[in-house]
Length: 157
Length: 157
DNA sequence: CGCTTTCCTAGTAATTCGATAGGGAAACTA
DNA sequence: TAGTTTCCCTATCGAATTACTAGGAAAGCG
Image (cartoon, rainbow over all chains, first blue to last red; front, side, top):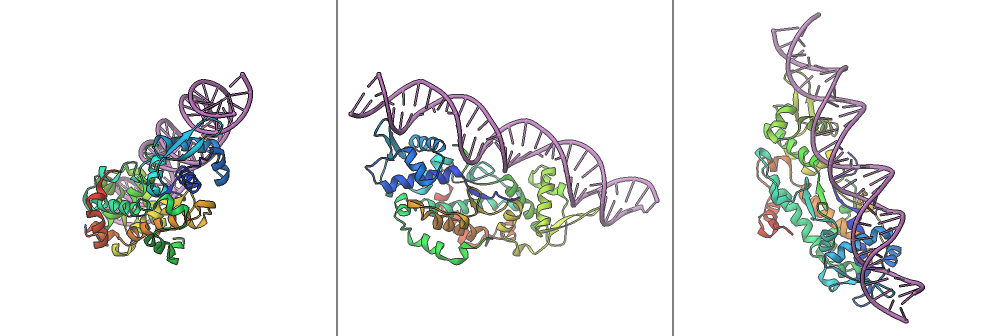
């Protein structure tokens, strides 16, 4: 019973960091997978697969050949962190592998369904509002910043 | 890239549902593992292991023999859903297997750390406030209820 | 063509997940 | 004391997932 709970996978973390490097590079310049991997310390063959997901998800466009690379398909202000996670890693929140609306509970557990829905809504409220531009510029929205500034939010249990 | 994201495991879901059955039974009565398993449709040998975790975590007390079973170790009003999940499944939120405060990011990803902290704080705000008593009585706190009542919270993506 | 870089398929070692099996050990009943 | 009930412990299992790696085919450039 050590490390489980609600976890953000390496895949999702890498995907967001790669997208942030692209956001920081601006809309014109394109970065090569190897450069992103080096900048963020991500295994580069693993990253290639993740960038493929981002491209198939329409978040990124790619170019092959000598001066090829990747760049964002849309302005960084219009891409939420939630978009990146969903494209690279599937649904934001799931319970036992299915998304909350598909669940059914009985007896005293009946109110679990609205509870999971509320949790998901609260996660969305952050990851759906914060964009790549916010994070890359280190300018998080005030409501998010005030959550993160509370010292109690940094303690272990 | 299908079903990942932030997931609540079967273990955590089962643990909460079992605890809810105990909460609904009241502080005196004790329920047998088999009865809980039948009531909630949980494989009973699997549930036995989970109940062992809850006992070792101090949330539940057990009694062997003819009129044995399990009951809550504390009043249901004093046990948060987060307590149950942590005891059965480890930390509420983790990124790449480690808890947010242990992370370190560089370059344009530096603001990811406060972002994960904010997400965790927002999850805690719900799962740390809502108790077994709330859910078992189907009386969620108003702030949670208002999140769950928003129709937009029930849509897929 | 020759070079670069993306794209695709496959594979893999380690771990986790969900679940099952089979006995003990303790407590109650009679 | 014998017998039943119930929790308790360890061990195992297959399938899936996680985090990577390898090797090459396809596309764009000079």
